Image: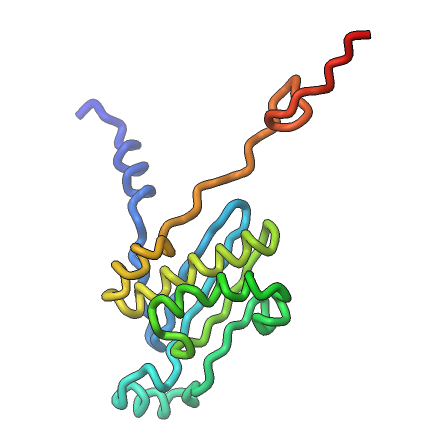
Length: 171
């Protein structure tokens, strides 16, 4: 009676939003790491879909048969020249055993290459759980669904950087 109702609004904002598949079987998830954020769209290839879904898809749109990963409209190997970054992105697919089963389109912004590749991997892992809920425990054990909370520590006043002090000179 005496409460304003703001606490209920805050609790609702903190609650996780349910990610669902759209009419064409696509999922949209967001992955984050440090200051990088990646928007990830995952579309199953024809090999992954059932025969009924393939028949329906043929009437609506041409079937997708090959598996690609595009990052900001560039192929994965072109956007990430370092093999460690490419390996980090494909790790959720390898752990789940579905490498080549999805077309993945991502838009990534902010941070450096390591943060961006981790953000994409986080978004892919979340998208895999939407498509196949039984993979949830496998990806959790591999710690792929956990957002890495580490951030850059802020600079403090009276310090050169976050913790480094200025050089002390006696004379």
